[in-house]
Length: 232
Image (cartoon, rainbow, N blue to C red; front, top):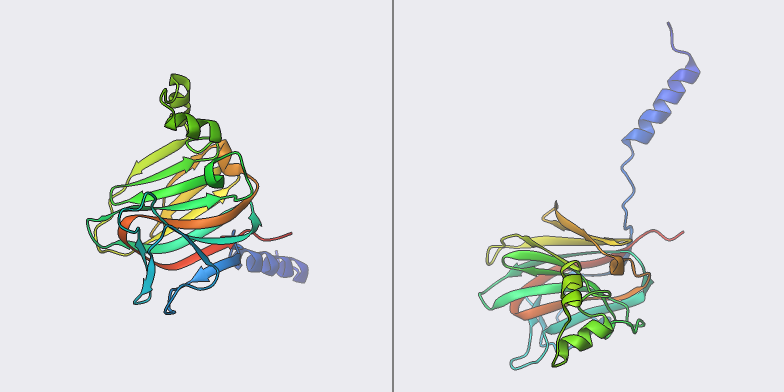
């Protein structure tokens, strides 16, 4: 049976659609920095940080005797779901790890507006719901009280975090990609899925800050990018 011109045209159209690459899920660049300048750009904020820009990388530094890990952050208008990518390496045994924090600085129900985080250390990846977990106001305050957490609260907190063993060799560069989508946070390492975690607090509808929090020193960062989903 000979194909008609209409059939041939429809086949060509379907083939063209199939060949088109899928749209990027987070196409909007909210912020990016390759640290090629001599100092931090004006959009960067800092809390108890001694971090510097040196030789084209962000060198994470917690000041000696500080009571808090170094925080280097970016603020932006409210976003629900985000993608954060950054290259990193641990350059000495003093590098204990770092966090990528997602916060809502307008939210008062958790300490410092913490919503969720991804923690990378030389031996593991940890994903946490901070909003309804460790940093929920009542839990955060109870942890500091003489009586401490109740058995029920301790059991609850076990459901608010997930740890995955992953080894990172000292001195090697790796690429971390973190995505929040509704109640899920997912992580890729060097382009491969590492793990994911779902918890209600992650679905918080407004995130206004992403930070790199260095514990303690000697973590290098490069090619830091924050992206958002397409706007209607």
